[in-house]
Image (cartoon, rainbow, N blue to C red):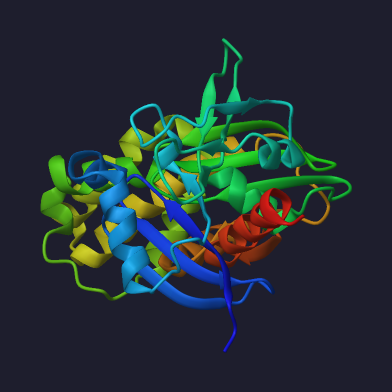
Length: 304
């Protein structure tokens, strides 16, 4: 039986993912839960982690490497930031050790953009970048990382030059649940309306200043011309993503196109959005990227 070498953890705001990994980087066991930072801050980070370590029967001596919001100021132990321009290799050198634990537990730092005109921070995405691009990828990459808070990152020769965060996912949640537009999407089923989505993406991309107007149009169109709740939901989603893409694609785009790091439904939505704009995309699975990044970091920290 293959022996585990370390435990990798991606600890987000609302999600927890843990992998038991061998020296070759193969996953031996996996755990997922909703015990993100917000839950763990109340129940205790050590207790949450230990429950999952026990579930995968991780040996007591096994080290643990964590990325994400566990390293935030309101997390378990503040892991700090690497400032832009940030070589991805520097992330490996600044992992913070959790004090008072018998087990060796390290938390990777995030990246900060200390620009008064465009301040920004990321935690967790830097590990995905590391896994997706490697330490010394030559050339320039423009990376789109969809999520509750989407990131657009420009990486040059293995260094994060600058990045921007867009609250696209969170805005969709609030707009579709807490505003008048909740009436338009009430009862929406799982059926996709790709036509409505792509139309909304194009409209918002071409006129992002009208995004708030285009959002209300989903309700007005339904009242005046009919339409399904699913079509309204896809219109809201497409409008917000289209406005994000208008900003993200406003600068120079590398010849290879956009590197899209995403998984699941978000990966599908953003591929459709880029397709609507005829933009070339290089897709990379987000789960694979973060596992690979954690594996690279673990090798750098614990391999003698």
